[in-house]
Each structure stands twice: as structure tokens, then as C-alpha cells.
Amino acid sequence: MLFLITRHGETIENLQQITQGHIDWTLSEKGVQQAKQLWIRLRDFPIDVIISSDLGRAKHTAQLILESHITLIPIIYDSLLRERDSGIFQWRKKEEIMKEYQWELNTLTRSDFLSSHEWETLLSMYQRVQVFMEKI
Image (cartoon, rainbow, N blue to C red):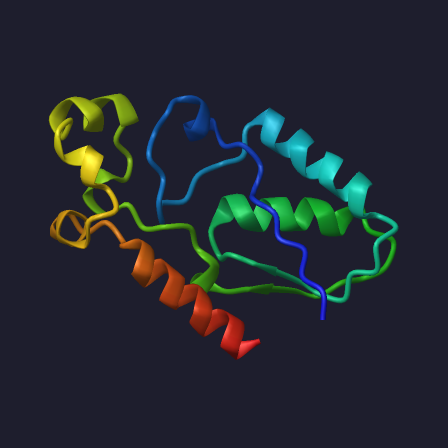
């Protein structure tokens, strides 16, 4: 079994340096173009299924790839593939977070800091993806 893994296209909020996490956002025009470029690279590759996060930016990227593919390919959406949950930092500009938590941001890998701010730890995210991999 061969897996091709890609990220969703750029969002408007990426441009604005807004932390997204599990909040749904819209692809920017560049993000739409990135998805279309991806299908060009993949159009001759035999794809059996597309499995995507259930968030809109990932769904939109997957649908743009599918629209341009010659054969009908099923798309499966799964919340286990969501990006890292940024807890209370979602919808905040990275610049604001840096000012408010400057000394603590150096500890972003520390579980105590992350869990106290509802930010998903790397271990938790890894375990979530591991559940997905076992499921498929």
C-alpha cells in the first residue's frame, strides 16, 4: 500500500498569520491554484481513494483534486486527520500570542504548558494519527 500525503492549500488566515487549529477556514486564491497544481502532478498517478480531514480547507483541496481527475475516486472525510488543535490560541494572530506568552512559547513541546492552554500535545496528535492508521 502506497500513501501520498499532502497539506491543504493556503488559506486566507495563513496569509494573516492567524492560528487555525480545528477552526474551519477558506482557501485563498493561491490555495486553490496550489490544489490545481497538485492534481496536475497527480493526474497520471493511479489513485484509489482520497482520505481527507473533515475541515473545509482540506475538503476543498481534495475536491479540487477529484474534479480534475479522469476517473471517479471516492473521498472519505475523517476528523482524525485534522491538524493540531491549538486550543485557546485558535483564531489569534501569532504575533499576539508571542507577545502574551513570549517566555512560555519556548516550551511549546512541554505537555504541561500545552495542556493547560488546551493546545493538543504532540504525543496526543501522534496517538490520534496512529488510531487513524490502524483504522485504515
